[in-house]
Length: 164
Image 1 (spheres, rainbow, N blue to C red):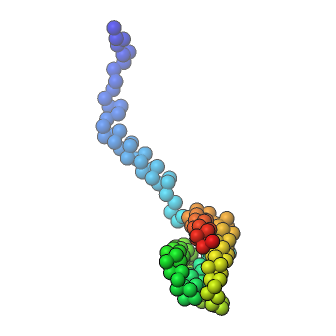
Image 2 (tube, rainbow, N blue to C red; image 1 turned 180 degrees about the horizontal axis):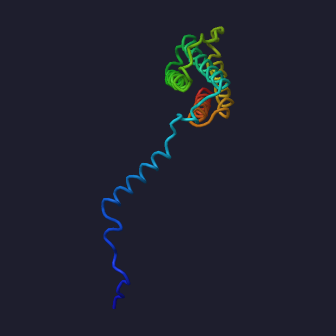
Image 3 (cartoon, rainbow, N blue to C red; image 1 turned 90 degrees about the horizontal axis):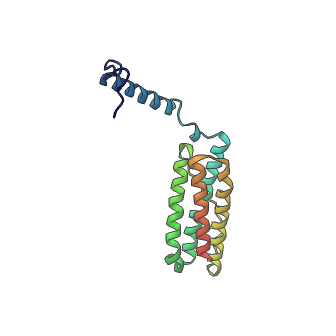
């Protein structure tokens, strides 16, 4: 047995139009509350961070240059090192893209060409140094830039292991 309602529902209380209008208004308020018209504050960098990103670009440029010098010094490494060099170049492009203004290219450090007999160890040292520099810089950032520097540092540690 069903119990009758004490009062009938009034159709005028919530018409389809008023329900639709309320839903649209609610959606608009939620969307307005989720956007920030002043830009992404998490993506902003301080002047010191701009300098750190420029330094990270320079470190990666030096690493790319080290790969080129190693391949010149010992062409027999091409089978192993070419893929790693391509990864270092791709990482450089990502760091440049993350730097405000794209971080202008700087002249890569010039050092003597490695001895062909010790070129693998020489290159491994350069990779280790770059990984340490990126890992040290990562905590100074938040969001995507921190993740980028941390992942590049981890990738370089993997390259270091491959060069062992």
